[in-house]
Amino acid sequence: MKIQVMRRVAMSSAAALAICAAALPVRAATDGDSAAIARIIDEGMNRSQAMTTASALMDRIGPRLTNSENHRKAEAWAMDLLRAQGVPTVRVEPFDFGVGWNLDSYSVAMVSPRRLPLTAIPVAWSPPTSGTVQAPVVIAPMSREEHFAEWKGKLAGKIVLVSLPGQTSESKEPVFERYTDAQLSELDTYTKPVFDPDAAAVQVRNRRFQGKLAAFLKAEGAVAMVKMSYRDGMLVHGEGYDFQPGQTLALPAIELAQEDYRRLVRLAKTGAAPEIAISVAARYDESNLRAENVVAEIPGSDPKAGYVMAGAHFDSWIAGDGASDNGAGSVTVIEAARLIAKLGVKPKRTIRFVLWSGEEQGLLGSRAYIEQHLATRPVDPSLKGYESYIAWRNAYPIKPKAEYGQLKAYFNMDNGSGRSGASTAKATWARRSC
Image (cartoon, rainbow, N blue to C red; front, top):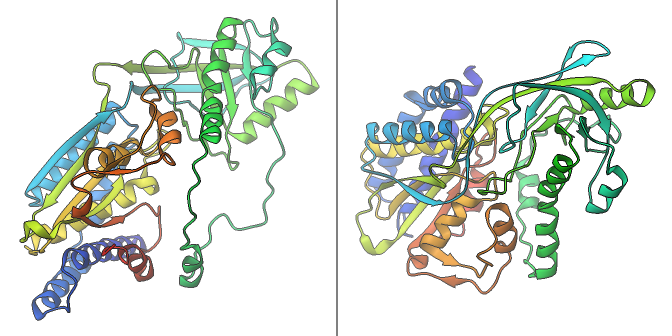
């Protein structure tokens, strides 16, 4: 615990220092600047609130699926905390998103040939079951519409396993590796984007397959669909992207751990098909189709000096408490705002802190900020959600807005875990005069 505390303290202090450095005009540091930096280090190292904030966010609030009740609870908590810490301006900036989805409870178990709880999670924005549904499984991998014909008339009353089971990874490489500064420097490259409308169209078509698959299974009388997790080690994610009104999945969808999924496949291939029972209590909410970014500001002394930003994405998937992705970054941004506000640091440039929403569904919150404040790209307005992001990211021409020149630097905290090294901060802030 002590190591975790010190790591978080160092990260929040480094973030505050980097933000303050960018908020200063490009000039030699004064004695006043040095004194402010020393005060930030002292407060961050000796009176940090980072771990207390992290516990409140991850332990007490937990998963923060975009536009869910829990995400709105987390927003209100963050805004109250920032205000209590002395940040003078705290607001939300709404943007169009889609349906809210709240997961109350769920269970998935094999009931024959023996009883066995399965490691699984509902796919976000998939419909609930009507009580508990129990049925035999059928192994019917489908990844293209051309596969539907093979299974027509064979799926009624079945729970359909739609993924190819594949092979176990059996990796000999470590799951995590700490990069050195030299290794991080090698990753600091820029690949020039290529605008290929045909490639974007293919990606959009592939994104829509999940909805077409669910509709086909529903029409065939299947009672649920099950896909295999894309990671082994009994990890599940619950990622879903069908959240537009009228376009949610047609039947309950479950993501199953690779190990359990392959067990069901083995049983189905070597004897009678196993039966599984699924219960999902989930609720759709269409009362507010707009999500929100939380924006806080510490004003600068010179209105003509522009502003700098620090941000992290606040939303998470439902499978965990959103600690490393990206509660860690969000806590760091909140703590950096606390340090600067409490110590009364007077930056020349305004400092803007943002907790993004909708990032897991296609960087939707940060994209909304860009379009509201900085620049626009030409995108077919009929495309929504993740499909719109696919088309947007390489769409040209880019048209700057009036505020474009005011943003001098942006410090993004989304590295998941580990220390925020000086080399990373330097690489990020080196662009502040561009």
